[in-house]
Length: 405
Ligand code: GDP
Ligand code: IMO
Ligand code: MG
Image (cartoon, rainbow, N blue to C red; front, top):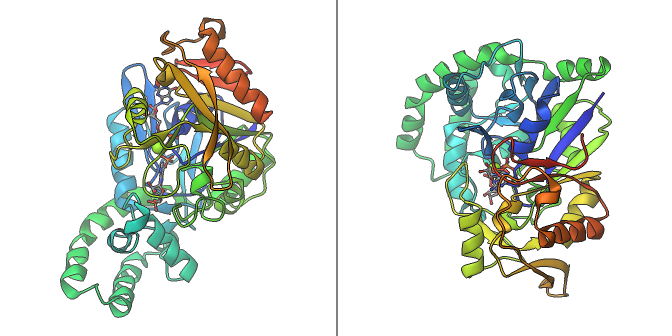
């Protein structure tokens, strides 16, 4: 039976959602283990587009159980809206198949205000993620279990008092404004309450029964709180270690799947050695429609940076790679790939001849242009990990499977 994990190998938005949807068609469970609604995972099936933030992307295929693990931070209002949105799209979210950890932490409106006030230089998604994890580490957070034992409202009011006392910019009008949002939060809580449970027991039983399980990473390796480009990172462990603490049980993953975009993007601030602040970067943004699914911000674009992917392989033990958005490289005269960095962290490039033929939607490897095949083979040889899937478009069916999972 299959125990898989999918993680981003760059700065997020590698196309994890599309691949998780693909794999989850044969899975019994799909598990999110870190992050929150900072994630934006797009899945397109025929002419229908689904954007998921907190609910695992496995929900679209309708087969698997979908679990939000204890390592996630959960905004009840965003989650309730997402559940209702899914139901509008005829995706059924039932208590038999959707579970939220009682140990997960709650994101409040105050966390969002703090995010904007304190984290400007990072360029966060303003979803309150950092402050919610800050409260968790500081042991002042509110957990989902407070919804089950009906202590949420008291804890929420205590939380407002605590911040009012400790942060001078938090004043009475701000607190009153937040209090006015309480009825909406309580409505959302009513909607999500039936799904809250001890998810680690569900995951453990699944493993014991030798079911097929897929863990869905959010963000990317280079946004990891420990191993990313600190401080320009998110606030959770996006690498493989996060899967153990964030779902709560031991699991031996047989496939550790790294998703890699065929170029590089980044949203928010921080170093980006191969960034292209020129017409080529603009062309990548246009070809790839590189605008954030969560915030709509234009993504910074640049060439593929292989030493950074090597680092992601080292950290996560990837043994299967997926390359996405290859179609977006059509129409360049030359394509560059960083194969090293000099002592000032400037990339050292290898140049490849481009290809003009459309790659969009191709499903057979032999139909790819020769230069495109050479590009993929070079990457595979450099990284010494097989590329098992090539994604050639956003749609579920735009895929070349070289090595069946
Ligand atoms: P995630 O956060 O890693 O799940 O990635 P996102 O969904 O945020 O961003 C990837 C974007 O690229 C989405 O809009 C996808 O629909 C789209 N996408 C995924 N794979 C491909 C691909 O192979 N080609 C193209 N053109 N778009 C893709
Ligand atoms: P998915 O799962 C891309 C970035 C933000 C910011 C930094 C910190 O869709 O790949 P945060 O709100 O987490 O405190 O912001 O991390 N970031 C992402 N970038 N994709 C994501 O998720 C991201 N989640 C956070 O832009 O630079
Ligand atoms: Mg995304």
